[in-house]
Length: 218
Length: 176
Image 1 (cartoon, each protein chain N blue to C red):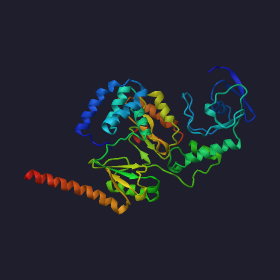
Image 2 (image 1 turned 120 degrees about the horizontal axis):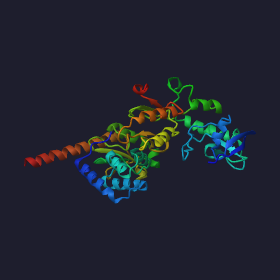
Image 3 (image 1 turned 90 degrees about the vertical axis):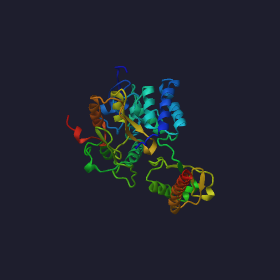
């Protein structure tokens, strides 16, 4: 990535950005909000899994996920076209169709990425039909409780473990609708691990990962 | 949740561990190795997955993530009486999901699992080719057509009775 400062045009506004950085990052830095769940700086390759950060880029026939587009000089971007919003709303509705809405009892209440996005995209928080998985809470992890039906499967915690542990202990298991987070102790327990899992809990955009009570205070 | 391994299986597992050497130590060998183990053991016990992770120097989480992704891998040994509930189109229309649920409830295990005594395991299959008898269930190699919830208990009881009869005859033989 070079240090060249370039100019891009987002919704008619000229933004300064560093050449090659993700479009999503440049927009967020420039004060233009694009819904996103899975983007975190420093992940390579990016998961591009939440399918919420769509934008329309001039010269491309279809909307593209902005986290996977490196910026270049003179890029012209629209974040608020009907097509973009339709894709984002549909994506968000699908996420909510497996989400157990119990905000009053959820630790992420009021700083929850899903709440923010439903407000931003004007999507109802409670869809008509919700498909839930069982059991709703898994607590086999020594430090964490995992609320299956809150999880949006963004993969942030998995990426954090990958970056910090020699043998990552979190992963996705199964596939399709049955996909959940799985935990597997990888050898000797490392005193660093609690720190890593704290970072996972902080990175969780919803309240799916919660520290067990005994680990709340260092 | 894992079932206890039989002494035979434990021995086989030991042999497999030493034979792992015949595979290259590459991540790309993960699926071939898992397939090879399943061929020998007919399922993947967690101990086997651990040895594979150890051998390939990758995280156990990664091995498990891959293994659960593919439907071909199973984590429970087949029972002595494997029950296969057909969920093909015709059987589905005739309420095969109810039959499956009946077996699950009766045996106290979920689809894909095995009872602790290893007597029964439940699987779902797609079309066994006799749709005229829908809904169909296979127990071992025997086809049971026109399944109904009331037949589920009968099938399981029959296996229990047959087992008891065999045992009695064996005892009788021993006395004579």
